[in-house]
Image (cartoon, rainbow, N blue to C red; front, side, top):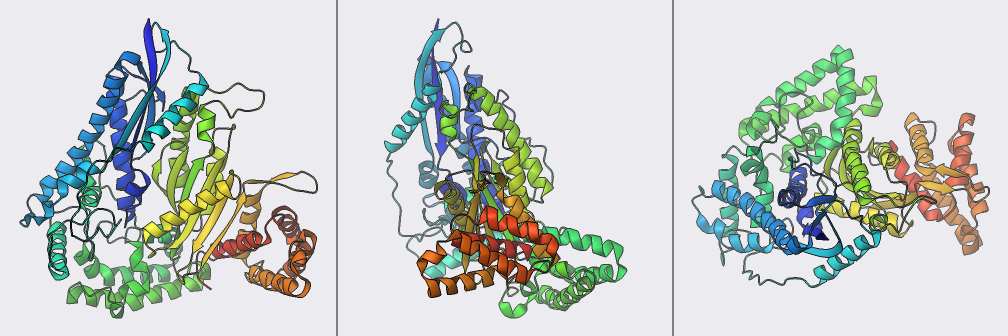
Length: 617
């Protein structure tokens, strides 16, 4: 008989490590490194005799390029070997991280200024937070015989929470250097006790040297990175590209690419059918070639589809903005000549279809997370009349959902940064983010619970960290303000204005108990705005008129749903003369206008922003 145990291994830090990102490549790298290390630990455990529980993944095959393995896993082990396997998993993670760091260090070892190594090893060794706990199970002949009590999972997670609170406070001695410009936690590499001018010179020379090494990643002007973020930035170039990932010409889009992809597709169709538009497009691309050749950055190619979206914004080619100062006179001349040709290209497009006359400057970040997953795994949340599903079954369903997320994202021109089963992070064009969110909600496989999402709509030049934080806060709002099973949308306008609104996926009509899909109705409203059937001034005027009601009649009127519904219907009629939309009007009034009126107005304002493709008024 074998005394069994469940072993739970957790690898971090997660949010802080991932969020230290300037580019989508940084974001992907942080997610991928953690996913790679977690799967490495899982595989080592299985090879040593453990049996998978969650995720129920028996294969030790690689990840490919998808950060799809969660940072926590549970395996079934012989109780007498639990400590051995826990230490084995932890050591494999630490060694894997050191292997990545050493590969980057080897590349940087050719750089003549050895100040790059000051504090390197201390930062690398201080990063990881690895915890593991185990709980005993009844004895059995082998590791597959004993059914797992659902309460055991709850106890196991409580044990992990307790272990995390007893943190290992290892000594880390910083120094006088300024902090990393990405996350502000660890010190930047470079000389200690030097002037800012000397530090700037060190990083300028290092950036120029790195640009000549043939790496995909670069260090941008004014960036100052710690050992941690240098490893994230160059992990692909120095380590992952040499693994057997069966990947060629690996590249990731920029935020500008995500913002412009739908526009590029629409314009490509127009250019294919219209020779004048096609000629205008080709003139612009030809004029831009010397510039693209000199900047020589990943993704900057001489085809319309692959030119980075940044260079379809005239301001990016404007020498007066300072964007071109670092390039040669030849490259600056190329950009200067291409700029008026880009505007002429837009003018020709507008003659055919004014709705795509210029690209959107906004993109979306969508974060999703299954609700009450701890209770699902512990058997506390079940479908009425049905027994709890085994964790292995839940894991298989979520593994399939991970694959579905990737397929759905691709259908809507999105990319998946990470997808760990019940949680994921995606980047999407403004035009498709709402419909994609609906499809992901529909595909969620666990009917015991719901899924909550948060979306941030941000300008392509907005700091990525700011947009990520907005998406996280939006997801938290869905869970806390709307009680889970909801989507919250936050718009970060370039002007500095922020707009946020949300709603449960399914809303019950108070009058008759009818259930309906709220965002289907909102999407219908967006489509009518795009068609011009409804004036975009409706949300603004609704807010203005109801504020007048408040001032004239008092707070009690604002709290009266019936008065607000009547006012909305009156204004809708004024802003829409198409009688066929009466049903849409009534659906909005009866179904969405039931709770916070300010949230309702903001939903309509967000819908108007999405309908414009992110164009500022």
